[in-house]
Length: 349
Image (cartoon, rainbow, N blue to C red; front, side, top):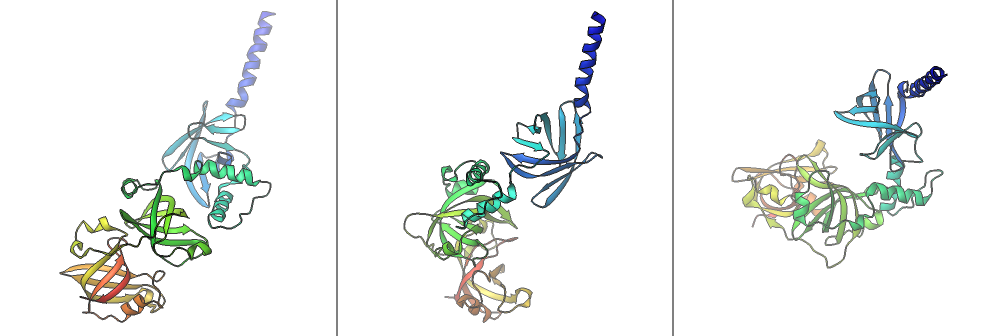
């Protein structure tokens, strides 16, 4: 009898182990966090992985062992352990399920953009506004109003992709389009280029020079230009501030010029070397202006979305000739070097 009981017990242990040892993890999984589906992970039978998020696909590999599934994508490995709902990584707070959650990251982004631009957001089928608000708060880490406003020095010290929040003043804007607007902004302690900030058309009309705004987004960089991206804003309080142009002529060709990035600046006594139109589209696109002083060359741009063909700036620059000597005011944009966006040209004084 004892032998029979031992045999039954051993058989039960073997049977209990079979599902774990024979678990088939291959196939399509949904990657989730905080109740939101962020993408899909396809675990293929040949140990390859395809991770897809917002239309972008990334390749990797996967293996399984007694601890679960290890997925490696672009050199980053993460271990998922089995639970009653699928696979989970507690440290990263992400989990895999065979079915998607009620809310996807794309739906949440559309909801967020609608709120930021003053539109009435559409709710996904079967999802309440309370659920969407809770999901949004989980992704944003709570109310962004709780994030302290940075000084310019703190902003400058932040790393690329860091979350940032600054209080500043509008100096100029590019053309509003499709719920977004690009802003040239400056405070007494520094200047900012805010790219494609979420903004309703009604609010865009209020972003006149001097307007105080509080901007929340992420620090980005493109071609050397440091900017705020994925930005939202609210109107600030206090008196308007319009910056005076700082004369940076003496910094041309030095390493110091970059320290004035995005500020309103002036260049005195510049000799026009060449004028060219982007794609040869006269009156329809940017004007490229090459000017120099004492052998040092600066490549300026009349940015069409800032100063189009109907503006005095565009028309004045279009009338320049090689050899003309002028004073130039601009916002010190940066692309593979100084590439100021022109806002004023007058004969040299």
